[in-house]
Length: 241
Ligand SMILES: [Zn+2]
Image 1 (tube, rainbow, N blue to C red):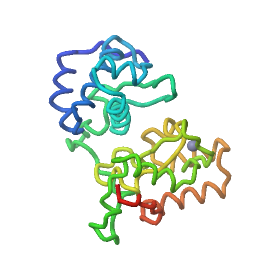
Image 2: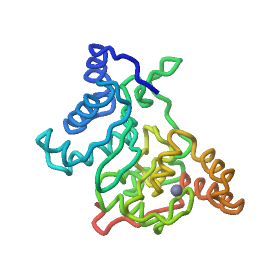
Image 3: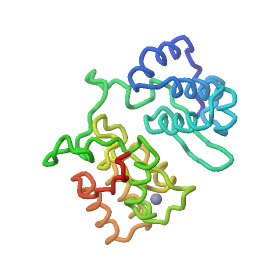
């Protein structure tokens, strides 16, 4: 797919006036998004390969904040991380108008609130577990990975550190997005292929491709329900952080 010619004035205004405030982007997120966009869609390329280190050097930042910004932009749908390795990242950039979280719906509502997987009914509303943002720290992200014991939540393959990532079951849920009820550890391949598809549909696709047995499919669908119901609790790190 070749990107259409951009209206740069419109793009800049959308970025500043809609995308950044609506997604709550930090200055790091803004700098990284705008830098990556400059070297991809702005020059007619949909995809971009880069190393965190080189982007950090160009922006005068250290690697950590740039890596975090890329991850955050991926989770917010501002870009799609296609590959991640020691040598670099391959991403597909999205224009503000194509980012689901901020795209207006036909009825004018700015975004659908997904309630199917993150219904907190029946749980104490203010318990630490329920209000914890599991993307916040390395230890909390690890807690979600550990719950899976090294297997992809979807395809059940082993997930060594270099192919392991966190997936939002309901990709654009506004409430509870980073809840333990909406985050799972999975392989990058499943994360990429699932995209914005509903998780049960994606599991059925894996089954049709012969990558899950009927029994495994049933178990995964049950696990999805258990996850949403808050039955798959990760162990919180010692100090809760
Ligand atoms: Zn997988």
